[in-house]
Every structure is written in C-alpha cells, then in structure tokens.
Image (tube, rainbow, N blue to C red; front, side, top):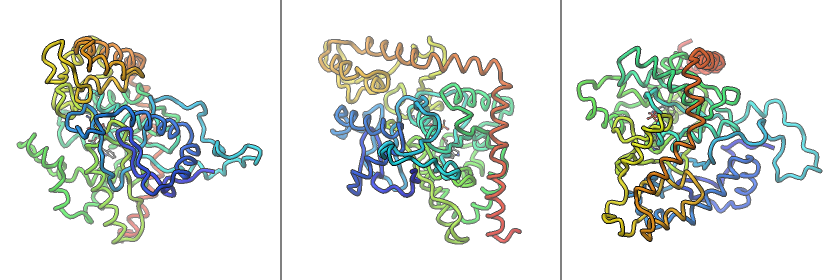
Length: 438
Ligand code: AMP
Ligand code: TRP
C-alpha cells in the first residue's frame, strides 16, 4: 500500500546527513522507509553513517564547512538523502510494501495509485553550466526522486530573462541545461522535463497569484535585494515578481515537494505564503509546497567561503573538460591555518576534505591523513580532482553525445511540455472560475 507523503508524520527534516524524528514515530519511520522503497531506505542508512562521521556538524563549525549542515528544523522543509543517482532495481512503483508479508497476497496496485503519487516539481535556470553545487545540492535529488514520485522538472527560461538578455545565448543555454540534466540521469520515461516558456500558462497564473501577494513580501526577498546590488542598472520588474512566477511554476501542477538547494528556502517559504493567501481568499485550491534538501544543501565554492555559484566564478564545472576540472579543484582554498606541509590539517573546516565525503567511502582515511599531516593538501586535491573527473566521465560522454544531436533534446522537451498541457489547462480553468474570470 502506498501512502501519500502528506499522510506521513514523523519526519520533519533530514539535512546534512542527520535525521530528525520530531514526534518520536520510530516505527512509522521504519515502515515508511521500507514502504517507499530503496531511495528512502538508503537515505536513512546514509544519514546514520554520516552522523557518526560528522564532527563538524557536532561542533557547530557550520560557517567553515564546504557543505553546510543546517541544524534547524525549518517549517515546510522535508529532507531526503539520496545515494548517487541510479535506477532502483525495480523500475515501476512497488505493488506492496516490503514490510508486508508476501503470503498476505499483495493486491495489485489500483490503477489510480500511480496518479496519486505525490508530485515533485523543481525548476533550474539555464545558466550555461552545471556545477558541483547544482548536482550535490539539487540534481541528485531530482534523479533519485523520479523513481518514486511523479516528477516534473522545468528549465526556467522566463526567470532567466530577468538577467540574460541575449536571445541566442538563452536558446543555447536552454539546450545545454536540458542535455546536462539528461546526461546526469533524468530519464524522460520516468519524469517530465520541459521548458517553462513552452507552457505559457505559467505566466497567466503568475499574474493571478500576484494579486494575492503583497509587494512588501517581494521586496524583502533576499535574492531581490542581492540582485539590486549585483545588477543595479537593470532592476527590472521581473526581478521583483520572480518568486510569484516560481510559485506559479510549482502550483500549476499541484506540486507538493520541491527538491532545491538551501539558497531557495526563502523562495519556497514565499511560495507557501502565496498559496495560503490564495487558498484563504478563493478556497482550498493548491497544496503548500515543501522544500526537499539533500545532505549537501549548501556547497561552498573553490574559494572555500561563498556558496558555489556561476556568478561568483568559484565553480567546479562537473561536465567540463578534465583539465578544467583539475584546474578548478587544484585552485581550491583548503584549511587556511595549515601553512606548513607538516602542520596538522582540520578536515572539518577544509572544503576539499568535505567534498571527499561525496566521492568515496574512504573519506575517514583521507581526513585522518590530513589530521596527522601524513598527506598534504595538494595530494588530497589531486585525488579529489581524479575522483570527480572519473565520477562524471560517463555523464560527460552522454552530454557530448546529446549536444551533438540537439534534435533529440528538443524532442524530449517538446514532448514534456505537451504532456503537461492538460494539467495546466485543468488548473487554469479551475482558478479562472474561482476568481470570477469565466
Ligand atoms: P540555479 O543554477 O541557481 O538555478 O540552481 C539550481 C539548483 O541548484 C537550485 O535548486 C539551487 O538551490 C541549487 N544550487 C545552486 N547552487 C548551489 C550550491 N552552491 N549548493 C547547493 N545547492 C545549490
Ligand atoms: N529560483 C530557482 C533557482 O534559481 C529556479 C526556479 C524557478 C524554481 N521556478 C522554480 C525552483 C520552481 C523550484 C521550483 O534555482
């Protein structure tokens, strides 16, 4: 039997590899992880693993971490810790929970079970490259979640227009982002991938939602404040309205779970507030979306200080040429207090050591080498570069192949938008009716 996520008490947050069971529902948790199959089962194991190996989290040295844990339980936040993307053994939803005995004759899942799967939605900007922060912070969850939930992923070109004004570049980057996501494991048979502007209903809904959204909510959005600083000559209305369009993206498909990095937490909170305001005025229409984080909700850049981000030039471009990745990793700032080769290092605050956690099971040993000065930072960086290159080599190959056949990418994107047409139409008909437009 499958339960919808909204019916599952017991877990509020899994972040930074730590599982918080808020209401003491241990049994519930156990059966839930089994019932939801491999992905959550693995998540729990890894969560436990990482707890015991995370002195940084315990010592609260969050600022210095490559991968910031968030110790707070956030309202509207659900965390799921996926393993490296890959299909589970079975490709279709389980007919019964593995905790149920098979002798009790598992009834075939009713036809509507697939329809009732909680809906995942996420959006990503066509920024030109995918970096390690995108993958560890969000894309891994996109991939993992597509096997268990009904997943919809969107390349948000309307949002990109708030900062990118070159038409050719936007078109090219949209194709590149689609190819990157497919190369990293999105399977068009398992999820729907499309381009935001191919479903222009998003903008209509954004307008309608804007009429329940006080301007003051938008003005205090952190990203709006940042953009006003970073592009002072281009403080366009789209920047202010950005979160309203984001809310529309999610709710037009009644998305309830939203895999994103931590930098999107404020946007998600605003989406929830907009949904509440709409439901209050026009009756229950949309579910309140919840953010879903990976165990790496904030990945720091090569500078070791700021969030990895294309605009800061501190990225590791995972689908780039090996020589580029090597250069980027070797340029990483490590423990700034380790000056001499013989000085002991502090893996808890070393970005390179933190990233090793995601590229091998032997990070304990690597950390030990640093602590005892048995190894030097340069060796540890070289090893990390080799592992990242090796890890992403198959994806890079798929990416190159897709970019050599962009028509394949276009066909997938068009089919995705077409598949969503009736959904978008249905929501819009309901919303127009509720608001008195028809
Ligand atoms: P963007 O490229 O800003 O559209 O981001 C795409 C997704 O990657 C979003 O869910 C972001 O929250 C996530 N993301 C971007 N940068 C990072 C980072 N440095 N650490 C963790 N997640 C990130
Ligand atoms: N604002 C998100 C980002 O910059 C992109 C985005 C647009 C999004 N619409 C969304 C993310 C809906 C999640 C859900 O990364």
